[in-house]
Image (cartoon, rainbow, N blue to C red; front, side):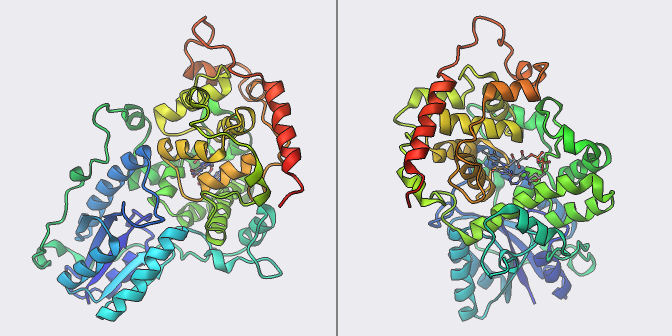
Length: 461
Ligand code: FAD
């Protein structure tokens, strides 16, 4: 039987159950066909930001090559996945469609619709886990609901064998040279270039190219290097942005070029003490997806409704302050360095992300959703769960959020985590010159204003 494997946020060939099971069923070359759909039309599916589009282009190129080595063609299509899948399955004579599950509200609605429709045309659909250590519905509190607090969530899942199966290699034999056996399609395989995912004028992606190898092999190499040389010191080193000693695995996990199970398995080869803190960060990723699954409004709605009354300003209300933040011109070197690092490399160190978000929300008084949207466009790791969950965490309106009175002080953060100014001077060459701006707001007054707003809304809702 021929199987169409629909790739989404799982752009890898290793440790991929949907692909593996399709290959195991295959009897003849050409029985497995891959598909990626650039979906910019389904309601509730958020179009990718610029940095993520850049990454996606390379991830698809890498996937195409890796599938070709297995004799599998990756078809590229743009449009409505429901229509495309049915049409292609019929043209190909595919009896089955496989995919890895997604967890956002909009994506689940799309998938559920297709899962209900295809069997009416004699096409079976099977979905698999590829992105999380544990399916969100398998992790519950003692009273049966979803976790809203991270620590007991992690306590429960870190003690369990992951639900995501252990990595197995894809069998090669029956699928070799598949492309020669495909029927003639009404539309060819599709050209990645036509999607124009890469920026051209201006080409702002130089820093991304210099900083990343956005391929499946690149993800494995990074994981190997991190576990061999950096994880042992992660506990302390992760707080020093100048040293860049965190794993930088987030975009590989975002696009599914690495699975959390592969990371988990590789970490088990190290001593438990040396990988505990690192794995608990992978646990935060799981927690964010758990929240998105159970609270699909996470990307756009305060999870604590009393925050709906907070008088945040929009980007349009304060365009100059917003752009000073976005472009790293606030006069607070810690935040400005982070924003410039983000613009140049598509990444910002976690410590600085927290302080930068706090300055925008609490001192500039701008809605967390505006900052979240900026990060969505500029981060290579921007994902539908971790980005809004962390923004809501900083704002205080999320689950297990930072208490509202915790307002990061960017000057103190800098003194503590960058005492020699190595990080800030890397990103702000003009730091000690007259060209660098004075702070655009007074930290103390804006902090007091924020606390006053918070005390007004607390107790409501
Ligand atoms: P490491 O420190 O090496 O951590 C290992 C892995 O654990 C990461 O790759 C990531 O998958 C996961 N992880 C670590 N911290 C978190 C966290 N707080 N929440 C969720 N997962 C975590 N992370 C994203 O992957 N995508 C986002 O869109 C995103 N947006 C953020 C927005 C804000 C305002 C903040 C404060 C944090 C955000 N993070 C996001 C979390 C975190 O900053 C990044 O995961 C981390 O900096 C990635 O670098 P790393 O891979 O070197 O992390």
